[in-house]
Image (tube, rainbow, N blue to C red):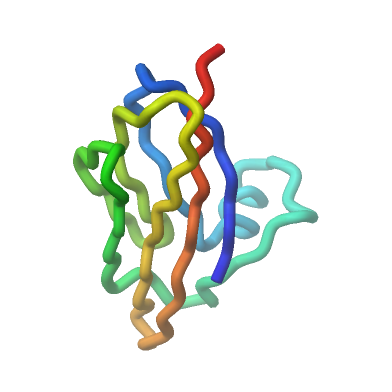
Length: 107
């Protein structure tokens, strides 16, 4: 299980998600990578994704690539904290849950 925390405003309608080959993708893009790890190993990709979105947030479209899982979210109530989860199954049959805590905060 992996936990990320992000802040969101009630008016934001953005994509939120997970890069499961973050280290490899950062190296390829010439970005700092020392703090990043890859969940997927070489030759492995995402086979399926299941999102769980709590009441209060509105789920838009899902975008799943070979190494990334994203969901578009809108809504939310100022001052609330929501937890979304993404259960990923890899092409090798490995399964893990990735969790993101979304803190609603107006500027």
